[in-house]
Image 1 (cartoon, rainbow, N blue to C red):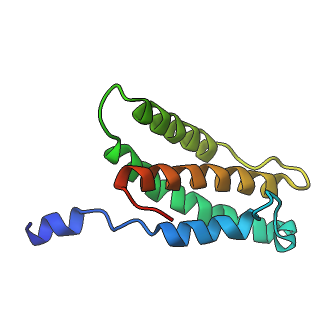
Image 2: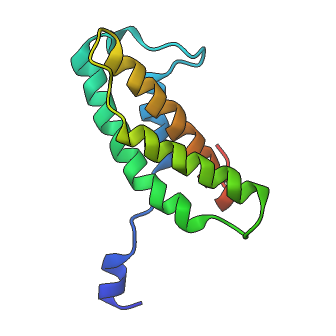
Image 3: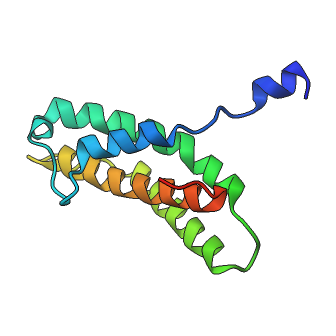
Length: 123
């Protein structure tokens, strides 16, 4: 691979960092940490989650497996849902940014799971 091709190659996906961001937004019981009640903290989490999704979506799309498989359709449905959530905005009301951050975190978790299953990795 030439130096030009190497510079165009995508950087490896850091699923561990992505999952840490998710765990900062979603607790194991499905709730949210108290720190995210503040709108600025939720807004910062949204920025991080969006960045992770924008990085992971094309990687997952490129890695989608064999045509006409159930796994392929499920993965592409998840990608479509992630894109829809990225196009949305937090509702302009109390708790709107936190609820939006939680939606982004759930879809990021699903994409991380799909990426791991396609690459044979495990948590």
